[in-house]
Length: 356
Ligand SMILES: NC(=O)c1ccc[n+]([C@@H]2O[C@H](COP(=O)([O-])OP(=O)(O)OC[C@H]3O[C@@H](n4cnc5c(N)ncnc54)[C@H](O)[C@@H]3O)[C@@H](O)[C@H]2O)c1
Image 1 (tube, rainbow, N blue to C red):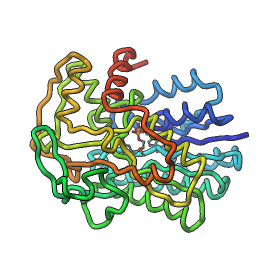
Image 2 (image 1 turned 120 degrees about the vertical axis):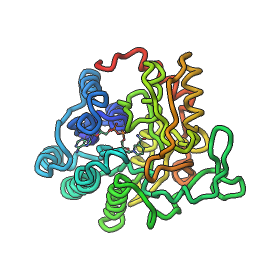
Image 3 (image 1 turned 90 degrees about the vertical axis):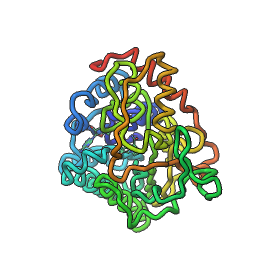
Image 4 (image 1 turned 60 degrees about the vertical axis):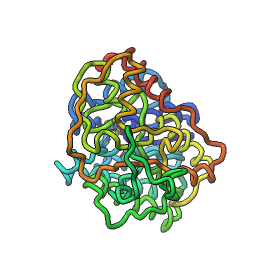
């Protein structure tokens, strides 16, 4: 029996992973206790997605377990043992702002939870591939010190800078910058996942995401930029842009394209490897550009204002250089560009009521 375990299985990346790997594995085990609703409120609940996966996939088994609870997590790993060939760990507290409200909960979910899973993997299925969804926030606010140039609708990096062509690569320091509490808890997890690869020779991969997006995001004010933006455009709800004149740039990757990267890594895994992953130069936008595109796609005007205060440690310009991943896995490529992603989010939101 070939089994994959996915944590955060009813979130954006987790649910995409469950669907993808249910076609490749005999069984997919999901771990998610809908903590997203506790973090962000009813709007962010992922119960609709849990219901959908259980109905859709006969080989999906769901556990309402908290990854911090070692005893409960151990029961799952003990049950499936060495049949587990892949672990995709996406469960997390994912917001900067929320982390500052409750640093203890943020750190224990992001850092301790990751350690629990690594230890269970080492104990019960040490040959499995362990994939961790890290974040570009591990670089703290170092990207804000790059030479940036203001354009009419976006910030850009100086064309003479080496990062101009492809974006920021993995050689940027993750040390001595302001990360936000969230960035710091993810750094702890990121390093420990690398360490289990280097020290214990386990097949661990760290994927440092830019903006991860897609129609299955339970987008909310504090997390899920494109999904929440489109929700507001459709519903007429007011949207507040936080700082940088709305010209901050994000690269956006569809959850399918990221999960397809996991598949390529799984088939040819390395130990403790780190990749920047995102839409790269292929798919990126400023908030102002995203608003414009969202309005074109929906045929509606977004009711928004721009607040002068940015989030602490928030990036002004981020584009992931994904060349390292593409060099290691040349057969992988993007399926979705930015207009394609936003159109999909729009169509999904129109077709599904929030409580479905
Ligand atoms: N979405 C992004 O733009 C983005 C960017 C960079 C990195 N990431 C990282 O990618 C991963 C996945 O992001 P996402 O957008 O799919 O997040 P998400 O919030 O949609 O999904 C995470 C899921 O984990 C669950 N969860 C949280 N804490 C848990 C716990 N203690 N026990 C069990 N389940 C728990 C939540 O209920 C949620 O369903 C996260 O690690 C996040 O930090 C996301």
